[in-house]
Amino acid sequence: MSSLITDFIQFLLQDPYLPAKSLQLRTFAGKTFLYANPIIPVDVMLNYIQSKGKHFLRGTIWSLQCQYTRKDATSTVYQIAFLAPEEKSFCCGNQCINCKWRKR
Image: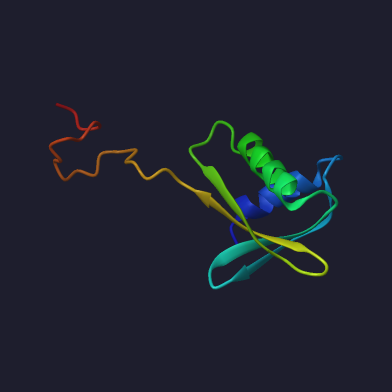
């Protein structure tokens, strides 16, 4: 499991105002899921996770993708992933005509 995701969960657990009784990560088929036992509604918890993700990733190129998956008797499940931007951040050396990184 990605250390970025586990670091983010530790960041959430350090919040004294965490609106959940527990948080747990599980991975299925290469996807990471956050199991939370929230004390607030699902959509408010989703907004909380996304705002904390923005704060956690401030100053990096990464972004957080989090979406509600399901709710069962004991927990609410969110799919969580950190994404890198899709645009190039360096010159690949293929002499692309529209390369903004190539020295002219």
